Length: 237
Image (cartoon, rainbow, N blue to C red; front, side, top):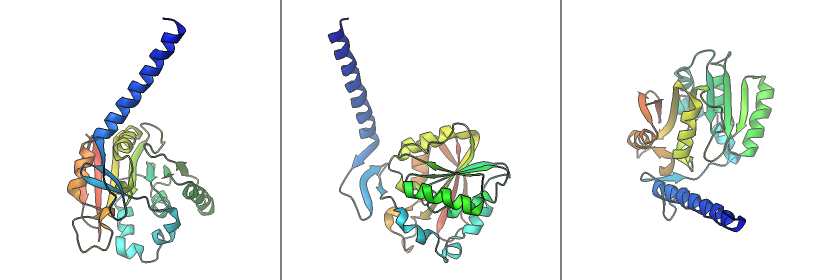
């Protein structure tokens, strides 16, 4: 094969790979006119919500949150030990991150954020609170950028519905979890039409199970002890 043919062959392979990737994503995701607060990207019948900006971090730290969302109860029910390795994906201001750190004093907490200003805030906050076992990580759209086979628990609090690549992210999370690792989703209840949360920022158990089962997870615990949110623990199938 001469240099010209070799170059043509390599370019052809590149375009075939690109077309294959496009076709794969084309089958997995569809697109429509965006709804209120939506991206217009649809996964398994659900429109993916727009990402909440880190400028809204004060809402995450509001004084009424513990009572509204039973956050202390959620923290106390985390399936962790003192030496567990945990990741808080979409950590935001670190509201859950630093509270979880108290549950794993001999372990580690990865605070994963896709927004750079949030990552820097988490780093500074960790220094202020002297939580040496909390590490801020810059995540990506398709991966949290965490070590493989290292995590006992991954937590996403009101985050999953905003993942722009939910299938790819779940695949990366599955690889990061240990064989017996768990994934916890806390999501506002989509079954409650009276709940004053935007529709695209709520999810039903049925939809969550549908999407996570497609990625090789099974529901291990459906904790219905929180006021307005689901507490759903998944394991690898």
